[in-house]
Image 1 (cartoon, rainbow, N blue to C red):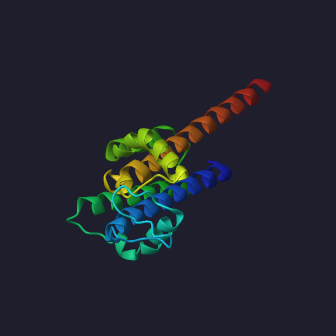
Image 2 (image 1 turned 30 degrees about the horizontal axis):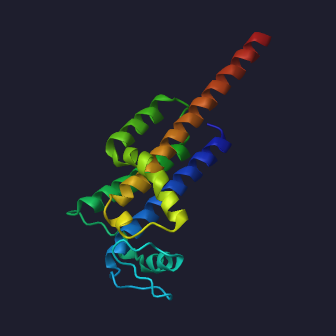
Length: 186
């Protein structure tokens, strides 16, 4: 595998991991913020109240390392750590420089789709989320009432896996085409 391709795949994997960690932090922190919390303009962070930039700052400051602890009995915690482990497995696979076989990443991607089906839901839900955030309309219920990590972090992870497979596939085809051209010259 080319060093350039490995670097791109590794950066995509690490960026996806950062998104998953960020989403887990937001999902956990929102539960600790009281509904009567207000920003400097007096706007509350309560039920159906749109988040202002300052509300996002309050939310980000509330994220704590305790949001990432492993609680074996809590399904959401185990599920979070499963997606983190899958990121680390993918990063190890990329760094190891497995031969450019498409079968291994395809199997890996298939396992990801089966393990994180909420990511498929996110393909539909995530674009409106970004629109709501950009318009300043996303509220507390937009995070609490949906499986936030699944529709955000898992979606990014599945898209990262898909992009990685496509990069490998394109690289394989180009390499095969170059070899064919070289063999025809001889």
